[in-house]
Amino acid sequence: MNIGVETEKTEFKKTTGELREGIISLASMLNKNGYGVLYFGVKDNGDVAGQQIRDRTLREISQAIANFLKPQVIPTIEHKLIDDKNVIKIEVRGSEKPYSAYGRYYMRSADEDRELSPAALKELMEKQTSSDILTLVPAPVQTLTFTKLKIAYVTAGLTVNQETFEDNAGLKNSDGKYNLMAFLLADENDISIKVVTFAGKDKTDLIKRNEYGGTCLITAIDKVLDYMESINETMVTMGNHRRSEEHLFDMASFKEAWQNACIHTKWDKGNPPAVYIFSDRIEIISTGGLPVDLNKEEFYKGISKPVNAKLQKIFGQLGYVEQTGHGIPLIISNYGKQAFDIMENFVNVTIPFNYRKQNSGRTEKKEVNLNEAEQRVVGYIRQNSRITIKELVTVSGYSDGYIRKILASLKEKKVIERQGGNKTGNWAVMKL
Image (cartoon, rainbow, N blue to C red; front, side):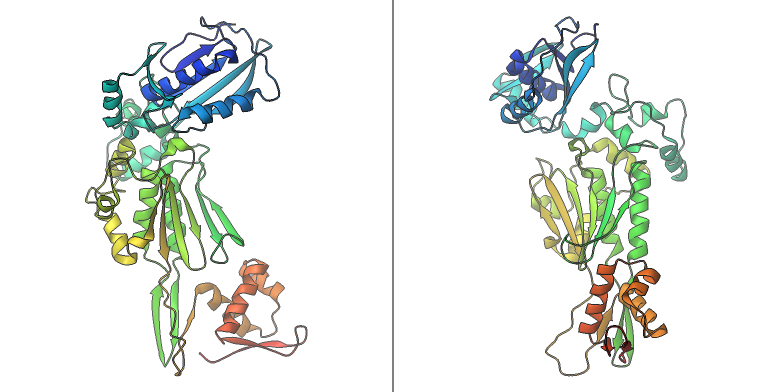
């Protein structure tokens, strides 16, 4: 069987005896296109010859790529059976150009790997290519529809031409295939968007995992925002004959952090942004770090260097982002620069909850802060002073462990106390 011809994105090698040459081809294709496919067990003319595969063959290939292809990429390595012959398929994608193989730099030209001159390497390093990676790399699925995206355009008051929509939106690459950006914006995909809630200040006790992925990124973003709005509970402060209210966190700051994470993350890395909710804070994490030509001080000032320029353009057309650069300064004005943990490969935004801790050194009657969950439990106890933990779990929908943490917190705040034994006693609510 013949599987085609070698191109700027495809390379054939007869055996893994040409592993070094194959890795050079991967670096070469990444530098040219941000994507490449390498086959072992296929002749130069595309005829399937077969490849001997031992127990460690795939692992040895993976280790060689990790050791000799830099910056590091995570390849997809598959053992395929074509005409009853073993073939190894390796697929790579990445945006961290330039890539080197065995310490040298190459560029793909037709089906050849040409070593770069110093001048050509300098030009490649200066060229901003990361903005286009989503439009260059083909989507893993080519049967895509975009009804939800079109609805978003119409809702924003924009005209949708059914015949030219996909081309106008930049949903296809130069080969006419749907690209990664199209996959992100399609009605259905396999991209996971999670909001995970933990009982404490670390990830020890997981309470809830909400999944909002598998759909158009715009829809997923909206679902997360709707959920976070619903849990942005109001803290009721009672004491000293007064009542005051304060939201758990600043929703505008969260919105900016979340939308930035989704628009500027390096989606080709395969790690979608996520939201983690702890007892004292929210963390929004995205992949990729800062663009190479943007330093921290520029970032803090709100200067924008888009990682995914065409994706950002779409979100701008739909009214999700502005070009004023006010998002980062807004977060800093509310939570300080310490809200940002900028790492080499990730950006983590921490939004602490707004509830203030009381000064324990005061002798006058202390104010008591109750969050929504604590208020609900107090309400159940007021209705039934002999209610059990099992019953609290049933009526509240919280886990057994979380109910116990709430009760411990309420007892520590001296809002409730247990009178009598565990089996025959009852709860008493103190005056607030």
